[in-house]
Image 1 (cartoon, rainbow over the protein chains, first blue to last red):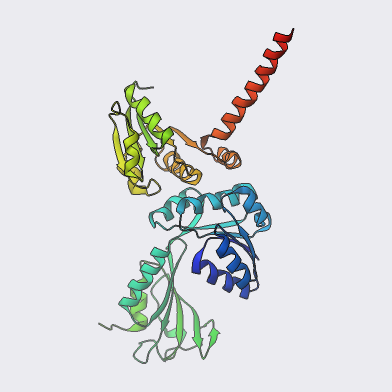
Image 2: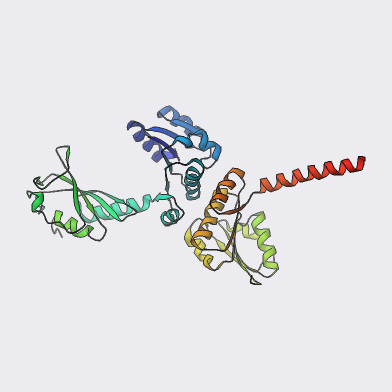
Length: 220
Length: 146
């Protein structure tokens, strides 16, 4: 997969590092010459210095062959234009923009650009963690219509020791994966849940709270 | 068209303030938005419209300017991407009937014309004028020689 990222700072650096580690081909566009030199030294990536919303620069960075364009600059207007140019001018199949202002998530989507807001994601994560300590991870997908939650089952969990087929989940909820001893299992009816398991749940915002309660018990 | 239009202008630089002054003088209701309050000093005493200090890429600021009631929307900041973003928001989210954005980069202009945003590119306009001057200059020269 070929990924083109426009942005700066630590988020850009660590994102690129994890992408190259996965074997993706990464190209970076950054405005700051000094930062570009640093990035080129530290990463196995093509680094282009310039304005990511300039068509000539995008072309130079290989936008024509990119599978994904990611715009994560601190300026929403730049992120929007970068993604629109990538799609309209270069036919990039997937372009994703960071919306620094959470209100812009919806606007970008209405203008045909996929967007995400770190404020939204981190905000909901913190809320969920503050609510229940066993919840390790929460990821809203499908513009927040679906939640993917990772929880740790403790010995008090009403689900610990039960077989999957005996567990009555509320409607529109799913135990997607069980992680036990660093091994991931996609559970079927004959599998059981044990204390210490990390369970990945798929829920909807409507039933999210209810589903979590059936796993954590009524704690407080 | 109504006699008095409701016009929102983003960017109160040389172009924005000039447009605001002229449009206000001939009787239109004008609102100017700029993130830097001191740019409003360029508005003349003839300007009788409203000033909104804020970043137009934030929805709340555009709402404050009552964009949904606007007949005309001009984006005249010095940043192409700001102009392109707010023009799209005005056209597609607030349904403003007449939207124009200034875009300096001619290549970017072409892409946004494809997306249905009307633009004015000072570079292209100036180039056209220069070429016209050359063409008419040559014609004039030819005639004077004849």
